[in-house]
Structures are given as C-alpha cells and as structure tokens.
Image 1: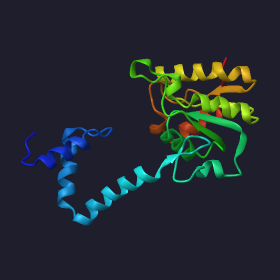
Image 2 (image 1 turned 180 degrees about the vertical axis):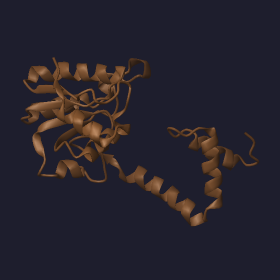
Image 3 (image 1 turned 90 degrees about the horizontal axis):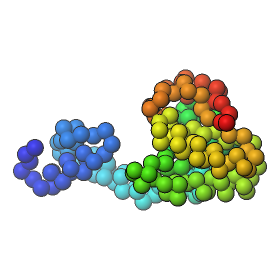
Image 4 (image 1 turned 60 degrees about the vertical axis):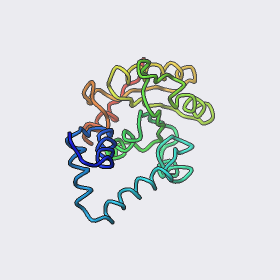
Length: 200
C-alpha cells in the first residue's frame, strides 16, 4: 500500500489493529476521515479520549461503567440470588437484550487460554468467589462461550463454586459450538437461558 504521508500511514496502521478491520477497510476509513468535516473527525477523536478517561470497571460485577457501580448492579428490582458469569461486557449486553435474565452478572474479562497467557489469576475469578462467599447466592449460571476456552473456563469456575454449596448451571446448547454470545440472536439467547442445565 502506498501513501505519501507518514501520518496517513500511521492512521491506517492503527485502524487496521481494530478487531474485524483489515488493511483495505482501514484504508477506506482513513480516507473517509480525511473527506468529512474536520469537526466530525475531531468529535470521533474526542469520543475515544473521553471513553478511555471515564470508563472503568464496576466494583461489583466488572462491567464497564462511568460510575463506581454500573446501572445493572444499581437496579434494585433484580434477583440477587442468581449470578450469570460471562466472559466479556459485550456478552452481558447480548444477554440483557434477550430480556430473559433478571439476575446479577459477573464479567471475567476473558477465558482460560494458557497459550495466550490467560490464566486463572489474569481473569476476575477470585473476585467472583469472594462475592459468592460474602452474599447468599442460590445459583450461578456459567454463560461462557461454547468454545474450547469457554468450556475450560466454565469447568474450572464450577470446580471452585461447588464447594460453596451453590447450584451451578450452564446455558443450554442453543448457541452453536464455537460461536460467541455477542453474535447470537435474542431468541436463541432467551432459550439458552431458559433451558440452562445444572453442571455435573
């Protein structure tokens, strides 16, 4: 790829590092940013800066939030006795969109993958166990993705939770093996939650 500007080459390089963005798409986005009014381009830069400065992890569940405690955790109408464990905040959003789950969440921020350096201590597993010890919870739904890493994570977390006397269940397999919750449709997610199974 040829560009006459080092700054343009740098922008294309940075855009191509985003998930799902290849070199061609990055190039189109970069040229689009050059064509739109300066104010629009700078508004994007400002939004990125703001989100990096203001967003933090909820002290309760690990979801992204601007407050100390996220909106879901502040909702007093939710069932404190059920905690749904997900890999990423995007999975939480997908489950919320299904409208089926009205309990609490816990975000691990990843799945076990020794090859990629994701070990138990690098995930939010210890805070989950501490949370379950501190408050009465009757069920934990392990809603990790149906992948090798997601399954390994679910079994590992279940082994830590069972001694606490908490029921452990897993989403029903309406979600395709190898798929991500983030990309599942709302009906499939609703059925998966409703048909969850206890882990043995």
